[in-house]
Image 1 (cartoon, rainbow, N blue to C red):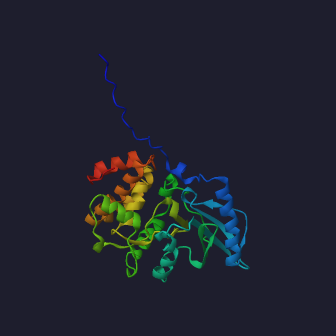
Image 2 (cartoon, rainbow, N blue to C red):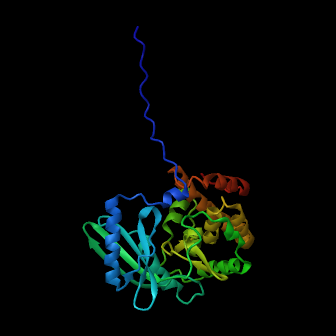
Image 3 (cartoon, rainbow, N blue to C red):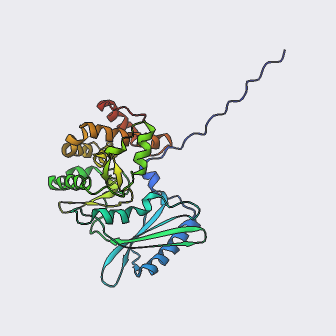
Length: 302
């Protein structure tokens, strides 16, 4: 009697696990990197500035290239983005212009948009932004917060609190929901868009700096409508694997984070991180976030 042969079972390919620092490092073919560098020189010519050659900062997974530039009298900062022409422009390409429209006049320390240019070349669409250059760098090149951030003076933390509070007061007309927050809310069936308020959309160590006791907020690509206190929730959850910093966030934002709105915001941000974990991204944050969700009792799929 012939022994039956078991049918092969298709197994999903394992998901590569990547920490935050591994994800930040661009993994571009040489020709793609060269293309962006060439287009950066073209962008500088369009904007009437010169690349000073002292620094080059690759954005998330090599999707943008930023560098210091000079005009006749001032040091400025230029950011170049690229995408295939066939793909529509993602919402974050308009973030800097949106921030300039809605944030003007608020006492929030941030780079100011000076000029923009856009063009197509050989199947790719490009956008270059020229902004004022802040005198300090961001705290980190990834979302992970260095432990020394906890030692910043109380005045800095108070200024950050005031800045994030003020963002929620700007006129919401014309602002779309922050795309990743809306997707996360829908993934857990918790969409309450009518209660959402203006927010920075990506508050983490990579987008914060300090000028004396003033908080600097960088990278306004994701400005839009989000859950109330979502910016504080983003900062807390992205800092959980640096306990000293997470404790300081709770010290200055605890009343917001423990409110019903704050718990809702945390659940939305946690759902976003859950989706990232499932694709193997930011795996270094997963244990701390799961422990936090377990302690707070928030329901999250992570």
